[in-house]
Image (cartoon, rainbow, N blue to C red; front, side, top):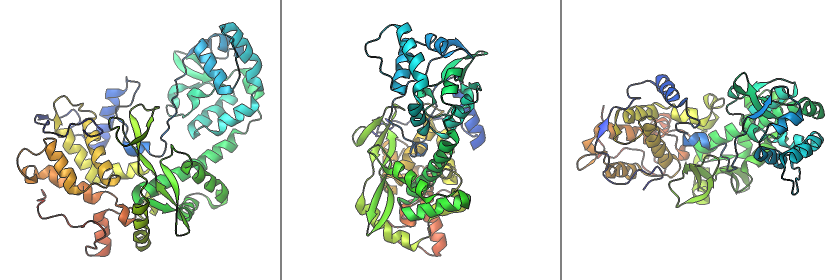
Length: 444
């Protein structure tokens, strides 16, 4: 069984045109959003979107308190549940000892929360850019609607703000007592720092996902070229690299080879159904795990290859957008998604099936280093080819071969096989053959 719980046998015998069949990329995304707008969870999260920011901490969403906007700190606390009060105390590191009555807990927090300047500073330093923007506005006395910042990472666990009903919509605000206590905190300083972290993380993800490894110095040079020269700080950029590559639960790690410091891919997200090779579970998303990718022998073999080829990841068109945008925007990916949208098996979710199938192929080709033959055989066992041999379904065969040849290849420093051959002017063999075997007859 694969990690998408798609059984490895001939089960796909009845196909139909799905609800997304025939739609272009924009229409398709709009239809998916319309379908899932009323749900609190995303319809499907692509694996490459999980790589830079995999977070294994389990966060509970803050409930709306019964206080009104502009209430005092005491009223906000008394309008919260006991569970939320304890979470606020934990976040602010305020000991409650054995206090159990709500009124007593609230009184302790009324006295102690304004004193937690050091803790406020520490919490703010760990927030993402959107959450920092929310905090900055809250300190100015603004009311910030929750819907305006759906991806404000960390704001739910921020213990110094409250979520209240504002004209029927959940709205964040900070009571006057806390605004006055924390008025000297320099949120701009942390915004600049987080901007550096985000920029380095984006570039690091691009280089490492497309090329497998990247020299640290090359990463720093690329980051310096992508921002204003007077705002570059090598010390801050190196600190971001250190944070992104430290700890067991990071998808990247520092790798030394022949005296040169590299960053390599340590792990990549997979669906949690496949438990055999998982290092740990990502409890925040509940459906994801990380699979180990540490392979020093593989990365060592890439060093000499990369010295011969200019890096694809350093091109201008990839410096200002995510690696996920690049990979999922490839024509070979979009064509395969369109095919599966038109061929959805019975009892499969027609809004997510194509994404799951293509995600699995991308993951197997890009990270697991599966061969083209192995993937076509796997699809055959799943029932996609109804007779002996792969030529039974030439269009799907052609699309899978096109995906294999069109995805970035680590050996070619992020260039695809097709691009690499085009640059060389002739087939140059590195590792697995670049030529599609004769047994695969491609559909026009």
